[in-house]
Image (spheres, rainbow, N blue to C red):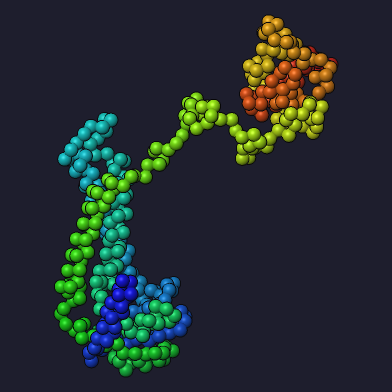
Length: 400
């Protein structure tokens, strides 16, 4: 099937290549090898007064339009007119819908409120600007649809679309003279200078665009597209299971049971040894406090840190240790009393030792690693040091 399609296009192109050329000249073409040559040649051709000429390059050459004498291209004005038209039509549409045809009072605002209309106005401006630019380029400037240009399928076009640069001077230019144009190209360093003649079909009134076969093909393609779209939208999409895996995905809500696990518990503890990304595990976990070395408090002893430490201490520590760290908490002998935070052992501890007990637990005291954040534990250490200093003030701590 694919080979048949390829052969069809090959036969179609060969028929077009073999089409007889008339004796009427269309233009004279010349090839150049470098961008500098095409720039100089374009400047010379424009200075000679030629108007019906064009240049072809395999890639954009900056400044070539100025060299050709094109100072005010029509693309800008066409795009501007399209933008102004799009802006006006968008405002007119919004005014008609919200003020004239179906007015509604929304939040006490005017029927036609300009601030709310700006986004749609912007979209309409951009849309019509783009459409006007494309249509203007194709129809007004490039004279399309013109699908049987005499330059098609010439050696000139094969080269300028791949590796060469070229100039075409049309025979309809008022200054055109075949001999003079050829001499000009030769003086500019051009090569492969050729005459391009009209095809027989170019000289008839019949345009391939309005050929009956072409029109019937368009109708057939449009009808087939409509049938396929109707069948797809009305039957296929209703019979096929939709892609709803994001809406109906297997998940377990908080505190809900699960039939997947043997213990029916939906909330699972992390796998032992799991480390969150960007988190450094506590290196002394499970070790006695005597193993703690080189663990310093990273937080400064500022007023905010001390207030935060006092708040966390009063919530988590004071029920057992008391508000002043004397070991006289509010448990009323229902729990073994902890030692005082003012004894010599705790006074001689480093900050890392106190942090270690908060993180790892000791004796009957559990670990508070999951209840108190890392920074809050260090803030509590600062506050414990403040309590110890209040009970063991030095001479320099007393006001003079």
